[in-house]
Image (cartoon, rainbow, N blue to C red; front, top):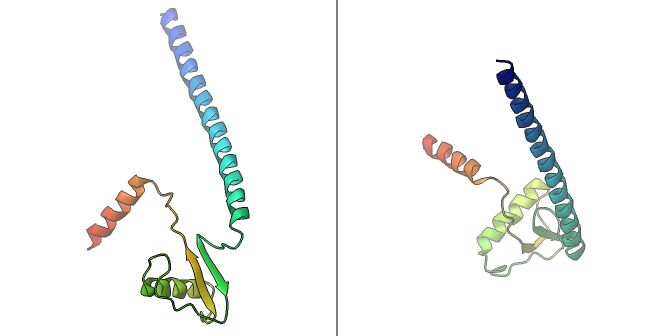
Length: 124
């Protein structure tokens, strides 16, 4: 009976010690990945110093760009994006010119997107 109790205590201690070790390894790995991402983001920001916001470059000018497309996008989509930027900036949008639009991949896990879609579809 005493041997069984010793074995249970040693086994439990080993399991919890290994779990703590795994947690520490994950924390270190997360810190390393965050440091690498910050370094990459700084180099990207140095290369694209004219970009502002989340992948959208907006320059305040007096000429509004009325070209038919910006990287293959329809003028309606460009107008909607410009209006959204103006709404976020609490301005009328006069003098705003969208120079470039870059799609940003979402960091939302796929299970979160699936759950959100399922919830939205259940409301319809």
